[in-house]
Length: 219
Ligand code: SAH
Image 1 (cartoon, rainbow, N blue to C red):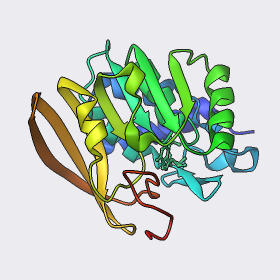
Image 2 (cartoon, rainbow, N blue to C red; image 1 turned 90 degrees about the vertical axis):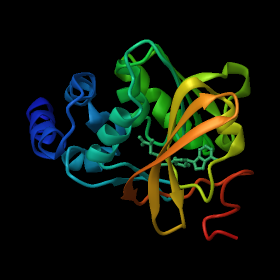
Image 3 (cartoon, rainbow, N blue to C red; image 1 turned 180 degrees about the horizontal axis):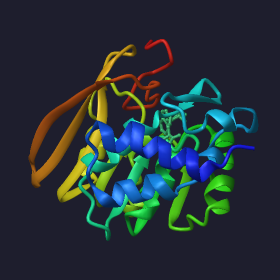
């Protein structure tokens, strides 16, 4: 049996800090969240490796570096209410739970949401709230949010998500084609004023829904 805390420390040294992540809150979260609880039992020995892993339903848990990068790009200070679209395994939500007050996470596949809830409960992430729904409409009842993170690739930034951002709030979202995207940071500067920055290239599974792709093949 691998000692997971050693694997985790090695992951942070070799994949996170050495590639430029400096936010101590993010580093601390990556050092403490037990990533192996968010993958299938048969893949546990690969949980801290430098790549995404399948989680069923044709979905994946993101590579550790991209989780750290997106979390740092949100520029959280600690007291925020954060919306995540695409709960998946629940790992990104668990990382966010360490550095925000409340995390609201929407997942369209009920089975994944159930498994994520279990893993989050196992590691005591009780400030994560999960809802099964099409997240391209956000989470109206809980809006506005200080930060929004979308962990599936969108053809365009859904208007509803922009509207659910607090003034001053940041959204990180991959936008592009089904095959590749660019990670954007959208900052809401005023009621109708948004600043857009392009960060890095990335590859995510598609955001499927009313204001996303219509299907996995983009029809
Ligand atoms: N954040 C996840 C990675 C998720 S992969 C993790 O840490 O493991 C992307 C997830 O987005 C998949 O689980 C997929 O089912 C979900 N998804 C795709 N379109 C969605 C939508 N419209 N609303 C909510 N979830 C969606």
